[in-house]
Length: 436
Ligand code: TRP
Ligand code: ZN
Ligand code: CA
Image (cartoon, rainbow, N blue to C red; front, top):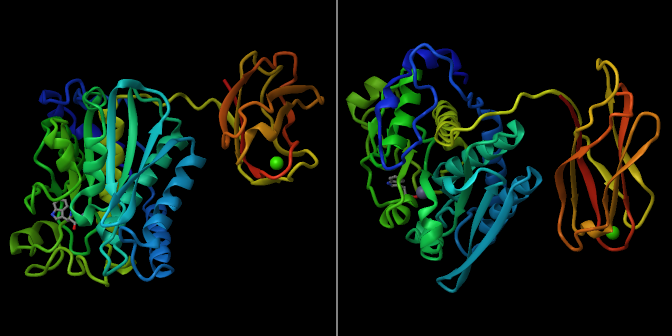
C-alpha cells in the first residue's frame, strides 16, 4: 500500500532520535516537506507468490524446509537464482551442524559506501514438522521482494545494502552465529545496522517492533504511525532470533514481529482486530504453518515497512528514470550456434542518440567467455559490448555506456548475442536502453 500521501502528517518525530545508528535519521525530517526518498510499495501479491513457491518446495521435499533436508537447499537455490538475475552479488556460506551441511545466503547490492552497511536478514529454514510459511517464509519472502524492488528501482543508496538468509535458526541461531563469528572485526564494524524479520505474517497478528537501536526502532514506528496502526514492543523473547548474534557483538539491531505462540489479549484484539484469547500463530512450529497460515494484511504492512526502513536508513536517492525502452522477453542463445537478438523500438526522441547511451544487458549464462555481445543501431551499425572476456564467470548483468551520437535515436535497436563455444548455454534475460 502507498503511504507517501500520509508521510507529511507524521514527519518530524524521527528527526530527534540520535541512536547508535548515527546519521541514519529517516529522510522525511521536516514537517510538510516531501520525503527525499520514496520507498516503493512492496507488492504483497509478489511476496505471496514467493510463499507459494516455498510451500511447493516443502511439499516436494517431504513437507518441510528444515536444516539438513533437501527442502532447505532447494529454498536457498530458489532465493539465490532470483537475486542473481536481479544483479546481486551472492555468496553461499556453508557450515556443518548435526552432521549436515547448512547454508547461509548473503546478497550484496553493488554500490554504496562499503564502510556503512545496512543489512537485513531472515532465517530461511523451517522446523522439520512443517513447511514454515509464517516461520519464516514470511520474513524470507518479504526481504527477497524488497531486494528485488531495490533492483527494479535501480536504487542508489548512500550506504551499502546487504541481505542475508540464515540456515538452522530453528536449531539455535546456528547460521547467523556462524556468519557473525566468521566476520572479521573490521567487517563487523562496517555494519551500521542489522534488521531482522522472523514471523511477520502471523494469522492473528500483533504489530511488534524490537526495542533495540533507537533509530531503527523509531523508523519502524514512524512507518506504522503513518498507517494509523499502534505498535508494541516485542517481548516474546529478546534473544530468540537471528538479530541476537549481531547484537552480542555490538551491532545496532532492530526488527519486526507479528507474534508466535503467545496469546493475544483483549486489549490487543481491541486495537489490532483478530481473536483475543488465541495465539498470534496457532500453527507455530506445526504442520499447519502453510500458505493458509498467513494474514495478508499483516504481511503487506510489514513488507512495506521493511522497504520504508531500508530506503530511509540507507539515505539514498533513486535516479530520474529517463526514457526507458526495455525488452524483458527471454531469448535462448543456442550453444556454439547462430547469433540471436532481442529488440526494442525507440520512438518519441528527437534527433540523435546521446554520446552516453545507457545499454542495460542481462544475460544468464554459465560461461561468459563463450559470448560475443553487440548493440546494433537502427541503421545496422554495430557496437561491440563484450567479446569473449570473463572466462568461466556466470552471467552478464551490466550497464554499458555507448557513444551513439552518430545514430538517429528512433527506430529498432537490437542486442545481438552469439555463443561461440560448446557446452555452456544460457539466454538473454533482458535488454534495456535508457535515454536521458
Ligand atoms: N525465532 C523463533 C522461531 O523461529 C520465533 C520467535 C519467538 C521470535 N520469539 C521471537 C522471533 C521474538 C522474533 C522475536 O521459532
Ligand atoms: Zn523463526
Ligand atoms: Ca557455449
